[in-house]
Image (tube, rainbow, N blue to C red; front, side, top):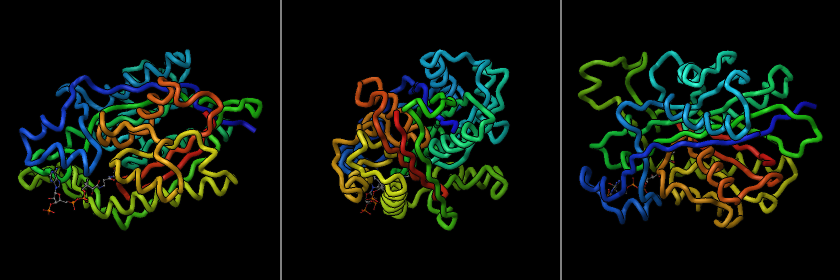
Length: 328
Ligand code: UT7
């Protein structure tokens, strides 16, 4: 059977670092609150002239170089983003042009913070179906551009960044593979985490601007509780279906939105925090980019090596959630 495996990874965060102390100058907040309630100490913000496709491009170049894959060899480009350059064309097409990936077909997936796992699922199944061999999956976000710096409940949480993986076909003899992907959503929670205006429901108008409807809105407490519950259940489902235990996983890569959510998840899964590589303190919540950024860091520091079993899980707007077991 054709298998899909992650050949390489690359990530990029913009240069500008915004610390908790920087934010204290513009919103009514404290370093103590942000650190104890979220685990975040700083985040990276893109420049005014940088958009999601620019970040995606930089992460993708690193992943392609690391796999020694030329842009012309990419067949599909999938960009997971909630903060696309514009409503259309897709950020994936804009990234395709920046990469010079002339032979690819490119499209976006919109699944909030679960977008990277969703993209990985699409890529895995396209490869397993036997039609494609080389797919680039990118999570790229510019959340700072959609953060309301008059709303302390949300603006302190988010950061910008991108991560990319080259997913390639391999045969059963190769140990590394994407073993499983599970996905789920519940649209009855659509209002709990959203960017209300700018689409066909509330097109841009003077009123939508005055009502600050072009910024992220979140019901934090509901999102917090559901994030733990849903990531725990879909991770457990993934492990049970493979007859695996959490102890067999070298590392866990949950979406990093709040350190307390990760603590709750780890407790529910009956494991320990040493299976987590913290990245939220440096980057904040980077939505669809958070898992590949953490994976890149884990590989660069030797925390995961070829052959290790790992579990990825994410939760985000929709609500959407997912999990994936990967043999690195
Ligand atoms: O990536 C997609 C998924 N996203 C998430 O998973 C995020 C989920 N939600 C959360 O992480 C948490 O809900 C937050 C960190 C956003 C908030 O934590 P919370 O425990 O739900 O706090 P809260 O909203 O109930 O607020 C507690 C207090 C409030 O003050 P009062 O009413 O008790 O006086 C807030 O006004 O904290 C206050 N507060 C702040 N204080 C200082 C809210 N934001 C801030 C702030 N600085 N930035």
